[in-house]
Length: 249
Image 1: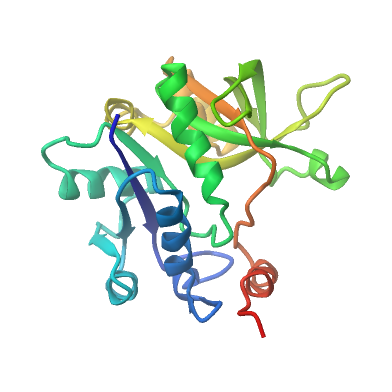
Image 2: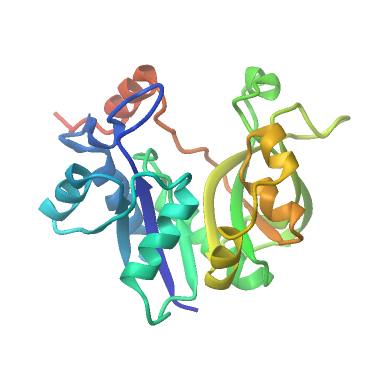
C-alpha cells in the first residue's frame, strides 16, 4: 500500500476566521500541521488549500500544496479534488485526511490510522481515545464512537470496528466512553465512492459526515490511541496551542 497525506485548509471559519494562517510557534498553523504530518513519515504530504495565501505559506517552507475549489462543501471533497490533481495516475491507494487545525498532532497517531487500515481490510480507518475528563462525557461537541473491540494492533493499540458515532452520551451502562478523533485513512476507492454519496439522514441529524459511510454499508476500522490532539477552533484553543508550541527560552 502506498499512502499520501492530504491536509484540507480554508480561511473561512465561523469561530476563528483565518485560522490556517494563525501564528503558532513562529509559523502559520497550517505549516505546523504540515510538519507533524511529515514527521509521521507514512508518505508524501500536501495541503489542499482553498485560498492562495495558504498555498503560498506552505510553499514558502518547501512544502507541497495544491489549490482547490473554495466552494467545495467539505474537507473530504477538498482532499479528493487535490488527490485527482496531484496523483491522476493512481500511484497512491491510501489517502490520509488530516484536519488543518491539529498543530500538536502526535505523528504516531497518524501512523496508527494507516496501520489499522492496512491490517483490518476496512474501507476507512479512524482513531479514538478514552474520555477521562468527566465534563466531556455529556458535551455534545465531543463526538463519541461506539466500537466493537477486537485485539491489539501493530503499535500495541486496541483495534476494532465502528458501529456508530454520536454526540449523545453513549453507549449506556458501565464502561469507558470513546472520544472520536477526526483523522481518517481511506482506501482510495472508498474515498472516491464516499464523495459521490448523497448526504444521509443520520449525517444530517447528528451533523457527522462519517455516518454517511456507515449508512452506505462502508466499514470503518478503529484504533485506540492514548492522547487526543488539540483541535484549534476558538481563540482559547489558539492560546493553548501557542503555549504548547512556544519556542524554548
